[in-house]
Amino acid sequence: MVQEQLINRGITSPRVIAAMSQVHRHLFAGEALSLHAYKDKSLPIGEGQTISQPYIVAKMTELLDLKGHERVLEIGTGCGYQTAVLSLLCKRVYSIERIESLHSLAKTNLRKGRHSNVMLKSGDGLLGWEEYGPFDAIIVTAGGFASDLWLDQLTDDGVLLLPEGTGKDHKLVRRQKNGNTVDEEYFDDCTFVPLLAGVN
Ligand code: SAH
Image 1 (cartoon, rainbow, N blue to C red):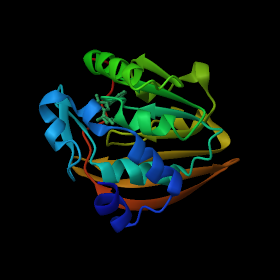
Image 2: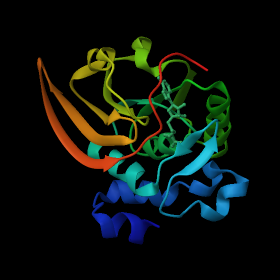
Image 3: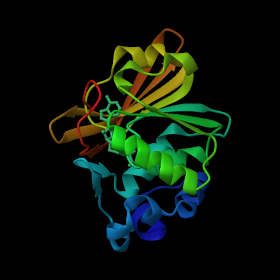
């Protein structure tokens, strides 16, 4: 998976490659799907939601350029796979999931994997998590448009990364805060499950 799907497609960060090699995707994909866990595709995780394909997880992680000292907020915990990868690369991950059963699944998965620098919340990620902000990075793993609250909850040089767009047409966008200005860069086209308001 790492050579064919990540390195051959341009993932170069040694830290990201090491983290992707270390986290066992089959533990997150669930027993029935474990045979498919390392394939080049997204997989269902229940409640109509999916775990992203490995390349997209690696790409998004690489775009955050984590050094190890950061506090990162993730919107859309899902089964906790992306959370686990992030937890190996930064100081602490805070992650919010709007579907209660997936929040519980992620809690079990991350505990099994001994990812202890992770804090999970069941709730609406559009609100951010002010109590623990400001964050060095916010990563959104559902597709849609950014909540204004996210930029407010970033540090002065924080970075916001999300799949932006409507329907199934999303594009990865990275907004780098620079005091009062924000630099924006667009990357891969992709398809994510929708970012939805409220809880379920
Ligand atoms: N990173 C996840 C991907 C899960 S799919 C993984 O590795 O498994 C995206 C998730 O975002 C879904 O579980 C969906 O329920 C959640 N989501 C969508 N809108 C949300 C919101 N406003 N707040 C929190 N979670 C949200």
